[in-house]
Length: 249
Image (tube, rainbow, N blue to C red; front, side, top):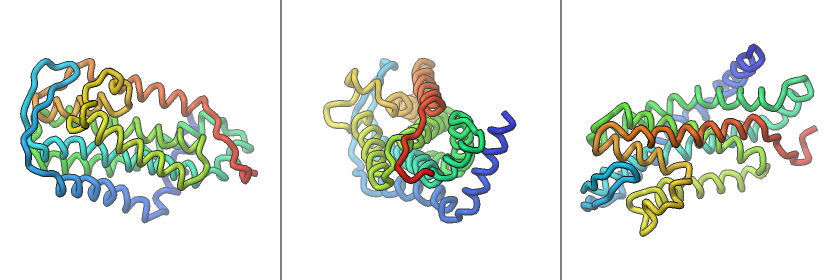
């Protein structure tokens, strides 16, 4: 654990030296969330839940504030996870030569990333709680934190396979948008609550957020499922070795 902690601190110091990255943790999620809220029409809609029996009616703006919060933090987390790993690829190769294991490097990368993303979590939570009325603020924050952990892990995992930065960022942008703004979203045309969407990483965090925002405390099982995704992604990050791009010497 001493190696993990020292490496985490070293990665954090490197992130703090990049002022644009810290600035982006505040601006990027806020812009995504604010623009989503701004362009959404105030139209009533009805939708249900995967576990809770009740069906409710809400304005599209309210729904999009909730799902937009998760989308903004997912995009921010996945892109930062990808960029952090991709930019440190040469450093990671040298650390491996110095005796650090891949699991130690991956765990330190994730920990430093999650500490950095606390700023994004705070910004997104404040905006969500102020742009619409939330019944259970704790549940809403839990959903934001789970999405952060899931997509940060997903971003670093993709970086291990996709060495081209343009391709990697496009993959994460498209996937996170499709997952949270279409396929698991009550406004997703004809696919919301289809059984196969239950296996998407954003489905259960969206359910937690919607229940917390409009019903009250979320169902316990809705909270358990994202923990499975997080555990699986963290384990994959620890055991999967990054592919070489030919320049890691």
